[in-house]
Image 1 (cartoon, helix red, strand yellow):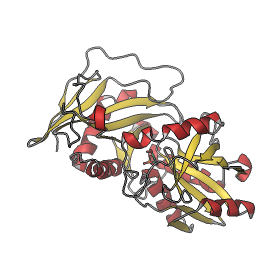
Image 2 (image 1 turned 60 degrees about the horizontal axis):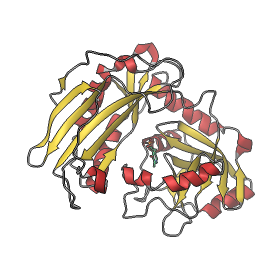
Image 3 (image 1 turned 60 degrees about the vertical axis):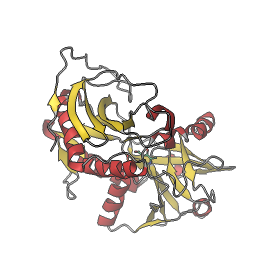
Length: 353
Ligand SMILES: Cc1ncc(COP(=O)(O)O)c(C=O)c1O
């Protein structure tokens, strides 16, 4: 258990009014904890939100030794605030940390830090339908040193950002670009980790997709450029002939917490589920034969993002007539219902702040 020192701001900011976007407004406080080799994590504290002072030689700026996470706090039924499976983010953080030679943060300490910070800024959790407080834990290497090595110092921080409804008016299907040139990750690399380099590597393809009018990129595997991996910030699911199919966790895709929740729910509903290799040809064939019933992305940001259009080279597949499929809608309603305390939480996923 951490002994977190809390220093409250003397100049609370105005809360934003009107439409909330994403990731531009930050709350009054942040969490910080230092790591020093030989001493471990120390000095956990909640302080007024502020800029950092770092040496320009801090290792994070040069070789990218850093990690981050993303989860949300929700204003639930009856006015209580909830987190959704925060221990999963803590565990995934440690898997990322191991890959990047960043020291682990004990899961209980991580969840405690998130809860205590959200509690301090609880009145920043927006209350309108679909809104939430985005939580961004991250760790950076701060030792001032230009050699390629493991930093001896790190900072673990958590910042909070009120965020608007992902969907303004119902679940809107998105267009996805299947990238056939650039790749995001390979087995043995860091695709399963949530670290900045993976996202930096994704930007060039994202530009191509946007230029062509598609909102996100769907990555293929880095070796054969044949097997479906994941979307820029979502895992991907297909409903083919009544079966829900998603790529298996193979080391090059992020093990999404929403993905895991969707698999658990579908299994509990008796829907056949398969985690396996899926080639892009299989999807094209299923579409041609009229068996591709639903396609959706899963992630913390949108929960479910129905895919209405998939482009692969010269083929453009229109799925479900651009409408939302019944399974996508049911999963969305159930997950958001659990998050907000409106639906029974049979799996113990909801955590009161
Ligand atoms: C690359 C990538 N895949 C998948 C996901 C979905 O993960 P989660 O459901 O934990 O938000 C995310 C978002 O965090 C992501 O960045």
